[in-house]
Length: 469
Image (cartoon, rainbow, N blue to C red; front, side, top):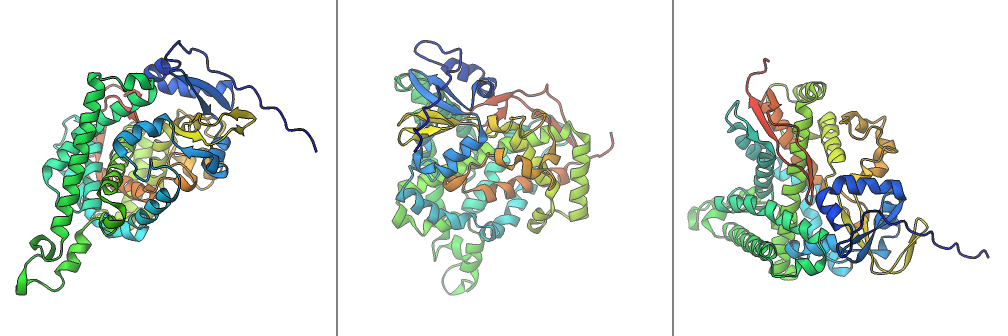
């Protein structure tokens, strides 16, 4: 038997500073920094404060972390510690083990295609109403618009169409600030985030308010869907329609699936799962749509093909849920927006034991960092990665890129809401295209800003109802 090969020394990224390590680089220029690490090797050591973390720059090794050797890389690290402050132990952040498996099993029916289909046309109606109400030829903050629409669509799909209006407004205001506070906790040394600083207190207050709002949403949904209530049955007593309760269930939301399991989950867990869904719905979907519209506006050939595909499927009628699967080019445009802009730029795991990865020794307890943004800008998989090219996702080319596209993760912790995300993305993009024959960017080109997602720093667009130049 041959002797085991000694581990390869792990290179350390240059530019670390005393006490804060590479935290300043991560705060000031996170995307150039994280992508620069590929030049130093397949696994590169950085320091966040005094603590070492190991960045995996090779997507094949990342798949080992997520799939092949997933048992040795537990969900955790600074990224998830920070997310857990406001997501709690939702399915995205709860530790591996029986609790995660139980919660994922309880939530899975929410995201079956057939279940989502029941809410599809209600989602389309919500989006059409909001997009159609935009005044023509006025510059709009498209990132804010997309977040507002994705949130409203999420609420209709998950809780039904009758939540109090103030909840939506407060959710929209709170989430961006909570995300900024969260990434601050990721990149700064733990001793700073534990100090009673105004920023730390404000973050805690916002998280507490978010939990209170989620509790109101859950209570309201339970009240209006309870058997015998006027809202649930449409009438009461002998005059109630015998089919009303069934119709009400049809009008309800995906969250009904979990409400039946409240005794098993508990109220705190219901809150955690609702907040997890909310964060994913706003940040990833809204960001993707804002970037997609920006790229479409700057690529006339892409816009023409999108409109031709939509016209061939829908003719002169509005979009229907059944149309979504017939829009492959739209899927390619959306996937390319996700590819080019991340959407996540840093995710962590924790080494459950000493383990060799790509020849490098990762010590037990160390943070292991992987970056969808980094992998999806790897020119070995995506030639000319800064070019927006939806044809990368055509049937003749997609096999060469599949291994490096990790926006939804992989393995047993792959994003549970991926099916819902694709449906919502298609609905909103197609509805904007149908409602507005022409749109253009009216602000300077946006800069990619890494928070939890990679969002545009500022993006204004103007929408017109006339198609002529």
